[in-house]
Length: 252
Image (cartoon, rainbow, N blue to C red; front, side, top):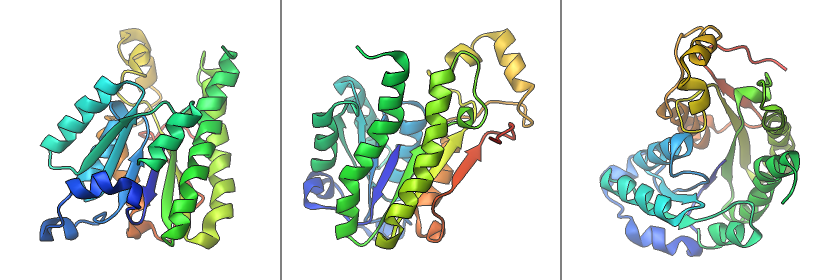
């Protein structure tokens, strides 16, 4: 999930102190904004963090493992991004609160808690900050599986369908505060998560038959739509879900 604030609250002073306001930065479309990107040290989340940093936002990256956060911060800084990192497990109350303030259940219960409930809880924490600053943007990350459930991924698929509904519900609730809420639904992307699908030749070939473009996506191809959705170019777009899946079937 991705969250954007329109200006930097005091709790992000560490990020602000790291950033310099050069003319070049001011010309970037996300200059002066703070982006909180969860699960952002690898794969799609990292690609989103990198793109938003390149576009001028001050980025807060997070992951459960401290070493992964440090690696991502170092890499993003080497690319000229203004970035602040902190470990965060979004299923833990304290970690969610720290992420915003500082910048054994069953399978179905666990997946819904992380993918849906925690996404809503994190939104509830950040919306008051957006209200203070007269606006902001939230983008949830769903999946093509939310439209077309995948074999052996029933709980995951249904949780991603729930995010499509959450997008519309939250968008209606916060629209009067100039907060926009949208959703990205990626197709098959070359990440560690999808390795079981992409590294098995037989499975990979079967998947490609379902993708008109004839290939799986790369993480950076998900980042551009996020940068658009949180920018002023999308100032009249809210409550929508965008499928980026190379033409795969995507209808409920």
